[in-house]
Length: 425
Image 1: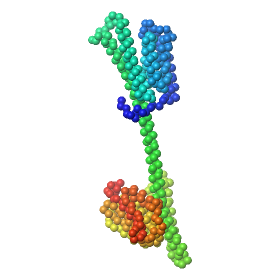
Image 2: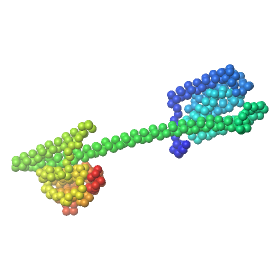
Image 3: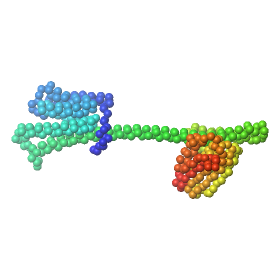
Image 4: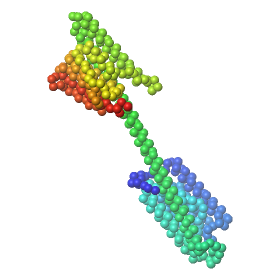
């Protein structure tokens, strides 16, 4: 068995209440069985020795060799040592119960290996017991050999000398007995340690899944917030500009006022439709959810016309042809960036000249929105709009540049990589 440094630091938890109760029942059953077996053996004349002590002493040794099993999982090493000493003591006093006591000793050695909370002390104590048992085995064989009658092996017929064969049998049987007790104890501890690791890994997996769920929820919240901002902010900005225009010309030119108010009404309807679309997706179950239509780069003319009605003087140019198909997610992101750039121009610069350019390069899509107006106030680099732009561009491993122009005005430039890998995805 291979163990690591981490294994040595782990301490097996103590027995549960049910396990302690089971140990008590097992210890009592072993004591009763050993005592009853002793009565049967003495009644049938099956004792190992010819000069046994009194029956009370025999019963006392039987109890001492078995009853400590009651505490075997709570105090594994002390119980093993006590049972081993009682086992040897009963043999020295010629009072051993032969069958149940051997099973109990095996169980005690196994338990010291499987349930020890100190691996070092577990190994040392079991080695001490096993070495002591073999020491007693050799001592008892030496005593028995000196008292052996001349005709002890009169029926021997094997190829080996009888005495050597008898010694080898004893050594082999005891080696298997103690070897299996030690081995199964190690295996019991290893199995418990593996279960502990399995539980730990399952808990780590559960925590990891919780974190992944939290990240997914947070990501979805950010996505929804970004969509709401992109949709609502633009329409509200246009409505504000048109409403202001209507207020200014209401008394002077009723026709222009009606046109401006009609534009406000149309933008309001569009904003409400967009909100309904998003809320419908959020409320739909997995089986009912369908992807609603979203604006893409092909819908820019409608967006630009809406912004022109709000007062922006927009020049629009498309340069080059896409070398590869533009992924839908990139197309949507490009549309939203143009939309947000125009919204910011309306909010911070008013009705000014705006140059919107779409460039299809060999491996990139470039969006360039530049206005000629004077920025009113200090640009908010932490605004939701700019944050949303950065998130969209970063999601496609693109590059975003924002800032004032040298000749006045503000520029937003975004570059999205277009690769065959993206198209396949």
